[in-house]
Image (cartoon, rainbow, N blue to C red; front, side):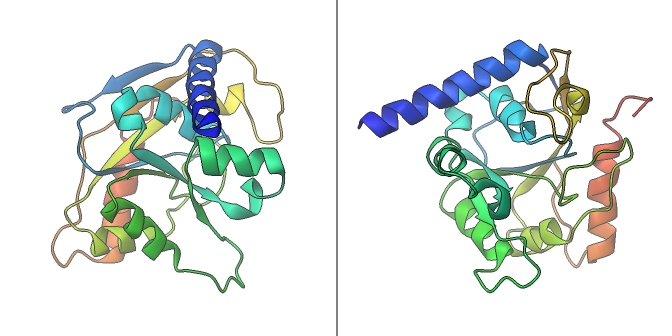
Length: 210
């Protein structure tokens, strides 16, 4: 009971802190946040990217939306383990090339079938540059496994300057999140075609200078 209260309090604190530091603004194209199972996929500039997406959702949807995160980073200390498991309820993925654990796509599909939406970063790593990296194939295989699930592109603007890779203390700057129109995989759509379409939908949300 106490741990659940503390986890809920910490989640609200993190969301409010992220909004305060970044002055976050959210823009939705077409349909806004709705109680529907979705995979939010975004460009990846910082470890707090998913906190901003989380904070942009209404509390009821936030409670049913889980980030997908790297176990190699988040399981390295007791505090990180508590945050990622109890507060953020992440789906943890073993990114080691020699991994022998569960298939990451199966873990993500199980979370969705259990009733949770996901936040993923298909570049696979934090990106220190301005151009979007090529997408990993995981979201295609996830879309193939669950073709009825909507994939919502989210462009996060300016967070790389607020919390760049390696930074500990954030720099207060304005950030924006642009949510695009949801896409689904088409019947018999090839992997390269889906990844190109998904990546193009995300790039289309970027400001001209990105």
